[in-house]
Image (cartoon, rainbow, N blue to C red; front, side):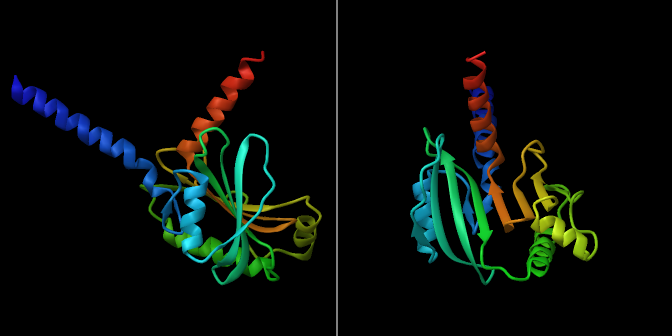
Length: 197
């Protein structure tokens, strides 16, 4: 009987440790996307990013930083749940980029190399740049009528993306999410909204 309980406890411990570390694969700059926004901000500041004040957004905690990412000047915005302060979204905005086509293609190519394991990742490139864009497409993007995007999903959570690379009117945006945390926040918001019905 003792062996049975010991085996049961061992199996429960293994399952629990796997459940706790399953979101550790969702990282930004080597930092797991979890914990509070202020903790995440501190870790990025230790890597040389500078804190910028960002006006509060209702329902979210938000922090902005500036620095270099892939050799480009960027703004990095960290988003977290206002109540739990839990980080769920990082947005990198390439605000000084001049060669949008080159930057988009370079990032996309590097992402496809890094996340090429179909056992772990699903890549959605249905709205991605298939060939070099013509002037009409570039003008449509500038006017806000068109955008390219490239998304990466963890195979265990295909409802919410992990990474989204977007070329839109404002420029190039690279977003990282913790899909599990985002899912919890969205469900909580849905429950709150449903209580009004």
